Each structure stands twice: as C-alpha cells, then as structure tokens.
Amino acid sequence: MTDRPLTGRMREDGAALDLRAYERAGGYAALRDALRRLAPAEVQKRVKDSGLRGRGGAGFPTGQKWSFVPMGADAPHPKYLVVNADEMEPGTFKDRLLMERDPHQLVEGVILSAYAIEADVAYIFLRWAYKLSEARLARAIAEAYDAGYLGRQILGSGYSLELRLHISGGRYMAGEETGLINALEGRRANPRSKPPYPAVVGLWGRPTVVNNVETICNVPHVIGRGAEAYRKLSATGEGGTKLYGASGRVKRPGLWELPLGTTIREILEEHAGGMRDGVRFRGLLPGGASTDFLVDEHLDAPMDFESLQKHGSRMGTGTMIVLDDRTCPVGMIRNLEEFFAQESCGWCTPCWAGLHWVADILRDFEEGRGEMADLDTLAAHARLLAPGNTYCALAPGAAEPLQSGLRHFRDDFERHVREHRCPWR
Amino acid sequence: MLSDEERHEIEAELTRYPTRRAASIDAMRIVQRHRGWVSDEALRDLAPLIQMTVDELDGVASFYNMIFRRAVGRHVILVCNSVSCWMLGAGRLLDAAAAAAGAPQGGTSADRRFTLLPIVCLGACDHAPVLMVDGDLHHDVDPADAASLLARYE
Image (cartoon, rainbow over all chains, first blue to last red; front, top):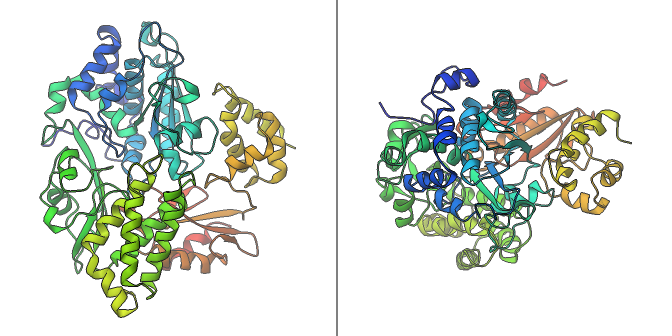
C-alpha cells in the first residue's frame, strides 16, 4: 500500500472532509506542534531539508524561496503569503482535487507556511471556474476562524494571520507569479521585472511568497513527519509524493498520488490503463501545455524534476497530456500555440507578435499551404521565444511543445507540405 | 446607478484589501453577477467607488476573460477548447452547442436565451470534453447530447 499523505484521508464519496473529520484524521496536529515548539526559522529549515520543490510547474525549492524573505524585527510588514490556486495550465486538474476534497489540508498548510515567513495576511488566488472549490474553501476558512486556527493569537500563541479568498477574473497570465500579484492589486496581469523578487518586493511592495496549492498542501506533512521521513516518500530522493495525472485517449484518465519519481511508463500503463483500444501512443507532454514532448524512448524515465530535465523536458505540473495516432501532432501544436497566443498579455514582443505568427503558420500547414521553409521560421520563433527574451515564462513555455514537436514529429510536418493537406482530416 | 445590494457587497470586498483598486475585479464580478455583464454605465458608476478612472477600470475589465463587456444571453455556455478537450472532440461539441443554442461561437441567440463562448482549459481534462453552463460543469459530454443538455436551461 502506497503511503499517500495528500490524498489518503479523502472520503470515497467525494464529499469534503469537514473540520471535525480532518482533526480526527490527525489534521492541525502539525500546526499545534509547530506553534508550540518550532520557531519560524525551524519550520523553514524542515521544509528546506525535506527537498520539497514547487508543484506549480517551475519546481523551485520551496525552503529556498522562503529564505529570501526578510525576517525578524526589522522586516517590513505586512508580509504576505499567496496561494496560487489559479491552475490554468491546459491539461492540469490536480489542485482542484486537493481543494474540493480536503480544503482544511490547504488551510493548515497556509497557516504553517505563513508562520514560517512571519506573514500577516494570506490570500488564496482561486480560478473562477472552480465553483465547488470556492464553496468548500470558504466553508473551511470560516470553520478554521471559528476554531481559533485563524485570526488573532492563533491557538493562544503570539502569531496572528488573516486568510482571504480571491476569485480570479480569468486569464492564464494571472497564474504567473508576478502577473498574479498585479491581478491581486486590481491591475492587468502583466508580469513585473525581476529583480526585485516578490520575496522582497511583492504584493503592495511588501515581502510576498507565492506558492502553488499542492506545494502548500505538502507542508503539514513535512512538519508532521519530519524532513527525513518526508524525503523518503519519493522514489528518487527528491522528496515527497506527487499528484500525477493523465488525459487524452488513455483507458482511465485521472489523478494518482504516487512516490515522486515514479516512471512515466508506470503512470501511463498501470494507473492510466494504457492507451484506449485501437489507438497507438505517439508522445506526451509530461506536465501541462508548456512542457517539451517526450516519446517512446523516454517512457522509462522517472517523473521527477532532474530526470525529465535530463531528457530535455520538464515535470511541470506532473499532469501529462497524451498524444495518440488518431490525433494530428501539427493540429495539437496549433491548438497549444493558439492558446498561448490568445493568453499572451501583450507585454513582450517575441511573445505577442511571435505567437500569433506561429499559430498562423501552423494553420497554414493544416490547410495545405505549408512550405518546407516554414519549418525554419517556426524553429526561429522557438529560439526567439526562449528564456531571456521576455519578462515571464509564458513565451518560453510556448516554445517547449513547439521546438520538441518540430523535432519529434518532423515527418508529420513534412507530410502536410508534400500532400498539401492535413492527413488526419 | 448601482443598486443598494451591489453597493453593499462591494463595500464588503473593499475591507479585504489595503487599497480600493484591489477590489476592482471583485466589484465588476459583483455587478456581473447581478446584471449578467458590465456596461459602460456600470464602469462609470464603479470607477469613483474604487478610485480609478473609467479608462483604467476598462483596461482591467478588458484584460480578463470572465468580465463580460458586452451583453450576454440568459445562459452563458462555455465550451473548453484547450488541448485535452480539443483532442477528444471539442470542435464537434462547439458545433453541436452552436446548433442547439442557435447562437454562433462568440455570439448570442436571437431570443437572447444563450451566449456561446469558447473558453480556455476548465481544469477537468480527465473528463474531456467538457462545457460549463452558468457555472455548472458538464463533463464527458457527447456532442449528440448537447441539445438535451441545453434544454434544461430555459
């Protein structure tokens, strides 16, 4: 039996754990213990030692992110903790499960994480589409206030925290760290230049940490079990479990909490049940729309941050999108690039100009107007969209399926040119 | 004119942030919840309340996918067209929804009953294809069932 700290106590019937049920299952024990016995620096150290890395896509070490926040008597206040619950990466649906089924786990994680950086106010920045998450989180937050887990002098300690729920106006950019901060301030979700990093100058100019839902949900388990035990949950030493998912033409699309570093093949074949009858596997995006395609030869790679990077991709959100042989790879990439073009905020030229150009060329291929030279233009755009040319990671993310798609599905592109049509239509 | 109810709800949001403009998106969402969309007149009424100019506020409104700056029908149908749903037939679902609703993509039916909008990923990719009507998520939707599904929304 796999140890599943994040999902193991969820109810079979799909209802949320309420406060009593969460407490009976051991919930809020880590918070009680931390407020009584651990200084904020010790909470930070435990998280750093656990190896916990951000689950929102970038995989930045969580403890290290926290360590940039100014601490102690001279630190500027109020300080903020923001939970990125925007989950707008196409193909990603993992945070929804955590919020719908165990909202108190997130609330406890918020309080512990906020305590670690001595934050005064926390916001959960939630996707507008997650109506059930909204209702269940609102209820959990109200229950936590009533029980003294939030508000003034939490559980009789000297620590106080306000937690507020904000519903997003809806835009992919609002899930980008600095875009999110602008959105919370009531602005367009354009990115901000870094440095200064949000940990020093963030929301309303104050020190701010932005962490993903799944990241925060791990924190009570890191504190409760200790760094060493938490690290051992993973298959490859990177620390913890991961909510993996699969969508596309697989037999059982879904989500599974597994040791971090489980192989792609095990997720795809054992948990997702393999491909549906009559279709063949062509490739997959391992962690949402903005990750590089992986193909057959990569299936035995462990799904963790370092391994996938070695194979030229990224774990991203860990929810894989599977491409089958009944789907045109050029069409799939066109769909992805249209998404990025539409959601580009217009701040940086390689992104707002380049992505529409890319989408136009890909439509040409599908409609039989593509030429061999267009492949070079697409490759040139992929280079222009790469890191370093834009303020945020939207453009580099858009480049990933494009550059890897050109490499792995070159024959399919060329066939569109030779046959002056999309062979799948 | 903002109704007393709208004003009351917006005042409550204003207490949750240190600046008034931070509540701009919430304020527009509140107006939209009451009226279906955010008109020019509504922007003019909201702007002084949250201490922004009308143009600044419109700049925010027009940035976000879920702030409607044009009138919508009684029911808003959002059909996900992002990658997982696209692979599993979002195109056919959009066509079926358009035919059943009598509304073109991005438009409203003549009887103002339905507005049909393609939308980015709704976060239910394991149940593709999906669509949302007035906030109700419908998953694993067969395009053939679009008409009977929409019949529930008078």
